[in-house]
Image (cartoon, rainbow, N blue to C red; front, side, top):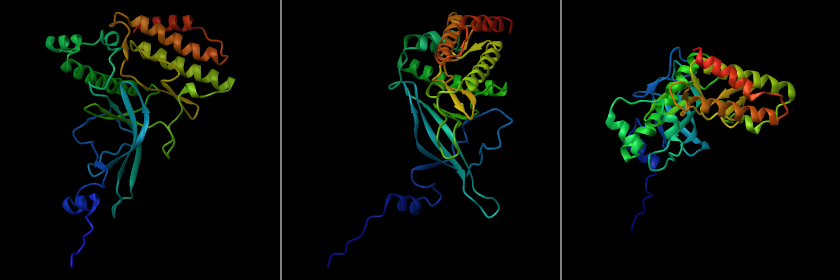
Length: 282
């Protein structure tokens, strides 16, 4: 008589072969070996190497990167209760899957040390594209660290590991992301307050010598009547970039156009003048 055996599942194989492996489809925390965000860190950041990361799905898909919702948690022990947090994982595309149509203008104000690397980036060789991709991820992480340190309304950058950046998730505790400003319809009083929030943020940013470079109502989140500015890989040095003031002017026009379209009386050229004054006096 022939006996039939049910093949072991992938999960039981993993647990039998690797008893210390995390649950199937998940990974140990990638904190170790990554570049970390600035101190003091928020209390919610989990740095324990025994924590587990789980990908909960895509929040946003874009031309340069996809943003996933990630849960990091530390299983309960006899001494401590379980701790967990939701984060946004921004994963920049590889050189084969990214679009580089915007790179040249934004990168003019940036420099790398080696002339070979500069030539590779300029010629868009495979090596050069990988350098550009790394610069996008590194530029956004560095920018968020500095902006958060100066109190600007941006997500806290938790860590950078290769082309993946983990940062603060802006949304509800059950994983519902805050809407983009473009998706909202605030009343007159809130609309005026939101413009003042934005004006304060971009003035402080200009005072640091920077502009967002791609500012619009699609790169601003509204969370509990508070604006949070996102998507910073193309941040522009207003003085160092030959096109810096053009980017600054475009940011003003784009965001003021949205507020004007919602019925708020705003003057983009007046705001631009204030930002130029702040940038040139920094």
